[in-house]
Image 1 (cartoon, helix red, strand yellow):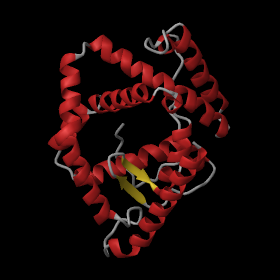
Image 2: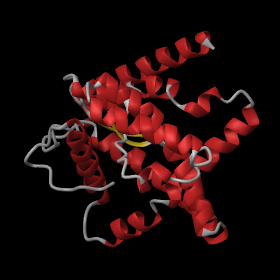
Image 3: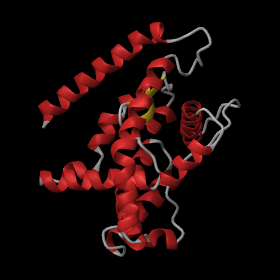
Image 4: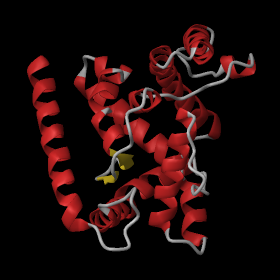
Length: 240
C-alpha cells in the first residue's frame, strides 16, 4: 500500500510539472491570468463532456427514473455522512472549532441514530454541514490557488487542489473498504449519485446564453474562495 501511494504521488508530481511547463506555450495574449492553460483546459472539458454524454448522464438519468426518491435521498445522505467525518478533521486543521464540532456531531448522530447515515437526523436537529477538504485547508493557511485546471473526468480544480487530492484520497472512508468488488461498487454508486444531483443544473447551464467553460471556471473559483473566506470582487457567479 505504501509503495502504491508513493508511486501515485510521484505520478501526480510529474503530471503537475508537465502542466506548469505547458503554461507558457498554452496561454494566449488575452488569457485570464487565473487560467493560463485555458486552451488545454477547454480540450479536456470537451473530452469530459463527451464521456458525460456517452456514459455518465444516461446512467444517472436511468438511476433517477428507476430508483424511488427516498432511496436516492438515503444514498445521498450516506455518502454525505462519510464526507462529514473528513470535513470535521479538516475544520480542526483550519482552526475552525465550530465547524469541527458540528461536522463531528453530524457524523456521530447520523452514523448511529441515522442508520449509518442513510437518514439525516443531524440536519433535523439543526446541525449544519460545512463540506471541507485538504485543498481548502491549504488555502486557509495561505497556499495560493495556482493555475486553474480542468482535470480529465474529475472536472474543475486548481494546482493547489489537485496537489491535495492524494491526501483527500487517504481521508476517503471508502478507501478503507477491504473487499475490492464492494469498494468499486460503492465508488460507482457515489459517482452516479453525484451526477444525478447535477442533472438539473447541467440542463440550466446548457440553456443559458453563457460560455459554459467560463461559467464553470468562475463559479468554481468563487466558491472555493468563499469557502476559505476570500472572494475577489471580479468573481460574479456561484454554482454548487
